[in-house]
Image 1: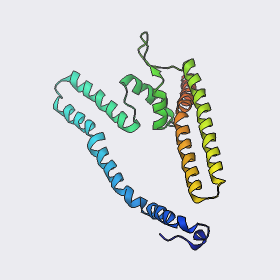
Image 2: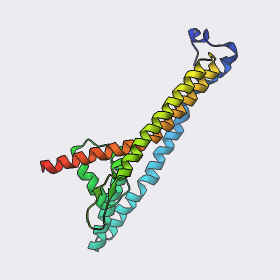
Image 3: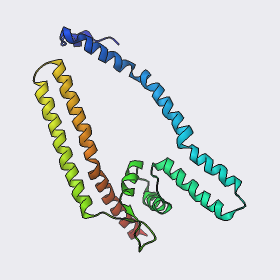
Image 4: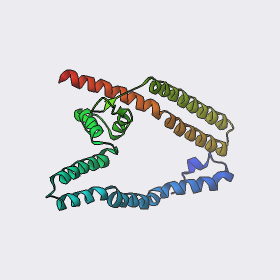
Length: 210
């Protein structure tokens, strides 16, 4: 990939090799990622789906045992649910999440967030969506901490960019990117909390319309 002359005019000559290598690596990125994508496809075929195929094979071999057949049917349903949603959980929690998903507006990531707040209490046969005060406290702490890290990264980026060198710009951009990634990681508790609150409202609406 060639660098346009207009861009070269703004780049200091001593940084030209670094920029050239960076542009070349970016142009080769799709080819470099192709083997990784192939490996992921093979992992999905031979590892992710293999337990489901084994359960199906076992089911056909124990047709004369009704209890075992029923157990395997349940296991197959749970394994299929795990593959589809990414949530590895009990049958009761699976049925809870499927009930929630009846309106078709929930993503796999959101169902995982809801499952974090599902509990089966000793005096109940079905799981309940429970949000405690400590969950709210952690959620609002996470949004505060993530905002602080994002602002810290933006300030570092602004200070380094003000030095008017390519190295300081790239360093500042890297620091800013790392701060944003860490801020997003910290924000996950708040996101889980908000999704759980949305699930509570959706379940209440389903009960009112029933």
